[in-house]
Every structure is written in structure tokens, then in C-alpha cells.
Image (spheres, rainbow, N blue to C red):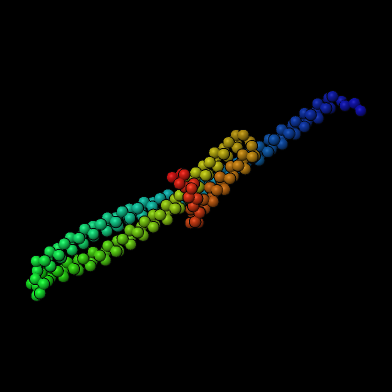
Length: 204
């Protein structure tokens, strides 16, 4: 059976056009998915940014509280040392039995001052340590947001290349950092105990 050359050429052209149309349709679908993914990722990054900024403000406040409380603690130490030295001097100078009224009043006053300083030191130390714990807890979550931001930035870069090349395989590759970035962002938002130490140290 003879094959008409014109029909063969037309069939080949039709097949080529069909492939081109399929390719265009696939590229259009890919670009649509890339646009949707970028929009979702950018929105999620915006939400995480607001929360991360609030956490950084909390860290700054905790850091300021920690410095203030330890400063007050050291000041109380100095006051206690001064009071103890003054009390010792009074006890050396004043007679041990039936001391004069000024001596007795001075000794009582310094003893009370020392007790007050000791109590305030304990209170200030507890507050300083609490501020340190607050700072560490907030820093833990800040690390999660930093990691999320880095992963999602990589994902957006890969999605941009995907849109240029039209490669579906690259789109699926871009979803890997996207998934991990979203996971770390959710961990920061919901206070999940997910903290890849090695990766965090690498980025620190």
C-alpha cells in the first residue's frame, strides 16, 4: 500500500502541533501552580515575620530585664558588704555587755539592713534567672523562624527558576524546602519543640 507523501507530512505537522499545544498547556499549568505556591509561601512568610518581630522585641525586653536585675543584684551585694563591715566595726568598738544605746541601735539597724539585702538578693537573683529563661525560650522560637525564612527563600528562588525553565521536576524539588520551611514556621507560631541543632548552629 503506497503512502501519500503529503499526508505523511500533514500527519507529522499535526503531531508536532499537538505536542506543542500539550507543551504549552503543561507550561501554563506549571506557571499557575508556581504562582499559587509563591503567593501562599509569601503570605506565610509575612505572618511569620510579624510573629518573629514580636519575639525579637520580647527577647530585647528579656535581655534588658536580665541586665537590670543582675545589676541590682550586684548593687545589693555591695550594700550588704558595706553593712556587714559597718556592723563589724560597731561590734569591735562597742562593749559586748550592756552597750550604749547608740551602739545597740546601730547594731540593730545594720542587722536588719543585712537581712533586707539578703532577702532582696534572693528575689533579684530569681528574677534575673527567670529573665534568662524567658530569653532562651524566645531565642529557641526565633531560631525556628530564622530557619523557616531561609528555607522559604530558597524555595522561592527555585520556583523562580522553575517558571523560567518550565521544568516540572524542579517544581517538585522546590516543594522540599517549602515543606520544611512551612514546618519550621508552624513550629515557631505554635511553639512546637522542633529545633534542628546542627542546622541552626550552621546558620548562626
